[in-house]
Length: 321
Image 1: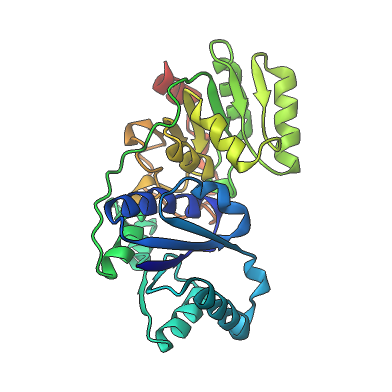
Image 2: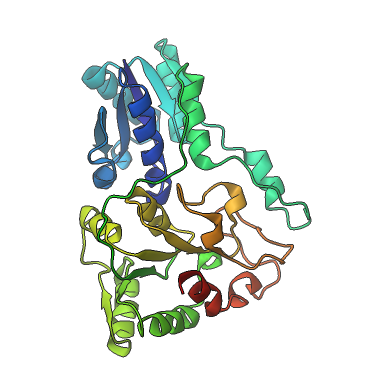
């Protein structure tokens, strides 16, 4: 029995699918999943039983004709029985229609768009937690007629743990602690712990190199590790400190506790790292305007990013010490 599953989005979103498909396949050993996503995400799925990773360059399959070509290639190579759309965007909607016309049973993720719009309405004063994104992924397989019960516990990969990882960057301003605060936090923690900085991109690497020159007992691994090597490094950390970003999810994949910092976004939207504790969330709780965004990509309604600037680094330190 083969399920063809796909998600082509950002790194962190794809990382969140890994614990779901891992637990699903352990509970359904008669099933095989072919997971289709971007080529450079292969290390995320290494060692998952009964899973075949299919990496594609999605830009090679543009428009209806390109996606029809992709569907034909996937059918020829894998001959699946079911289709699981874990993304639900225009390109996957087209793929779903193609597969449906070929009489395949297709299940699609329910993102809870209306619920999330209500959650991020700054005039909504009754903020309630929504379904976890990992449960939304699992629902797709349930809709195909399979059972899966998620443990919501991460699996520790390494018992030897030392040092603190710190990933101070995020894709959007609304998810990132001001850099001067992150610098001071790292400087303080370096007095007791070995600090390893994580990031990506030329600007981030340059910033972190500058920090390392000013902070003793610190090392910058940004831009130096493959995904596989980065996962191995995070697995051996005592703690990871991350924004609401991909490194939080990488910590979950390798069983490392993550202290996560949240600004305009909120764990209520369902994106807390798998198995991570809400007790390790650092945020300003009494701002009625947050969350104002699911992904942190909106401008600040107040104009002052109070959700991030009012965070005191002692809030993070208290979680550790």
